[in-house]
Length: 95
Image 1: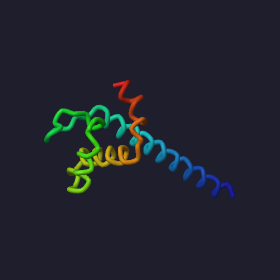
Image 2: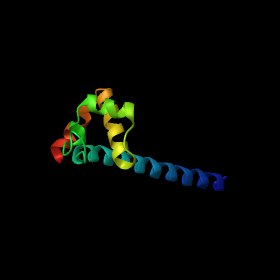
Image 3: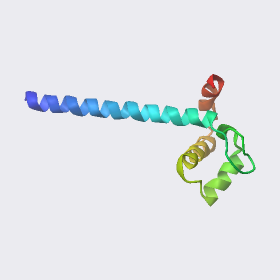
Image 4: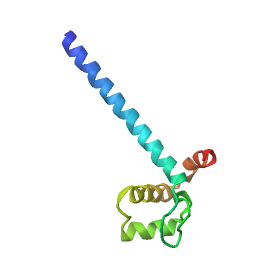
């Protein structure tokens, strides 16, 4: 019985660590949205969080860039699409 309990505790610790890592990853993505500037195109130099929705919609239709920039732009697209821009306001004030 003790052996089973120890395995349950190990599994719980592992899952808790993964949840904490996921939370940190999500927080970092949101922070990157308010700190990262568009590196090219019509809105070069604009913070990703300030990109107009129609621009993100265009990228959604044509395809986001590869890598981290694409992940950030796709995240910003979803945030704007769902009207969740208020999530970024406190982070934008901090940066």
